Image (cartoon, rainbow, N blue to C red; front, side):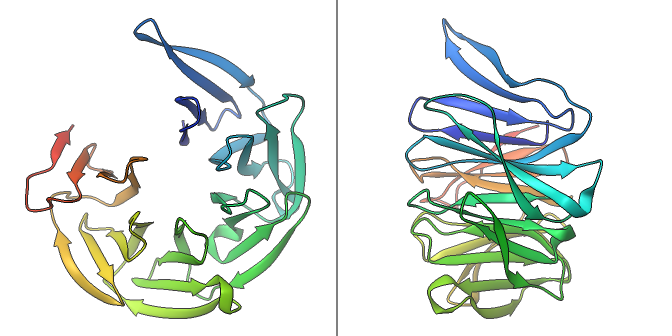
Amino acid sequence: ARTLQTNSKDNTIYSGGSDGKIIKWNYDNKQWNAQTIVDSRNDYLVYSLDISADGNWLAAGGLYSINSDNNYAELYDLKNGGAAKKIPGFKSNIENIHFTPDGKGFYARDNSGFSIKYSNLTSAKEIISSQEKIVSLAMNENGTLLAGAGADGNLYVWDINKNFAATKINISKGLSAVCFAPNGREIIVGDRSGVLRIVSNGIVIRILPGHNAPIEDIKFNHAGTFMASASKDYSVRLWNYAELGEQPILMS
């Protein structure tokens, strides 16, 4: 399993994996029930999923293993069902898919982290070419900013409304994950040593230690009250974002 995405409209979870499967999980009678949306396949690996804000569309990205230079994303109609629509124009791995708030397109990281593309749900075009490998990509809730975590330790913030004008902030030796706080004012970055940092207006305002291996992912719950950090140290830490002085809940 490479990716999980929750749908706040109907309290379901979608998962995608290296086996190419996409599964919809429903919670009923105190247990999770699996519905296979796409069965196993040997020519496509799923690395990233996102659901549009209205809950109507599921975008999937990964790797077309037969020809990575002619990669594609997939679009699923969650409302009406049917076969996936293939969106061409990608190269190598597709990861970190983020729908725009209006659901008319999405941003994704591809080409091994050296390119960020925008898709209008029909085709894709490059909007950012990076000299530093971007290992994680995030978008703020109102769809005006993108943030990228650089492998060399730089945080990039791109202003979508200003032709993707970039701000570069040196953070640490090597970043591994990035996420916007729901308040839109802060960006959380994780690095390869397991440290979390909160950045506001280009300045690190708080450091959250605890993990001792690279941060793999950072996510907030839909209410914006708790932040989860997942690490290669086999733990997830659940932080009360309003009370960061408290010890996080540790799940090992």
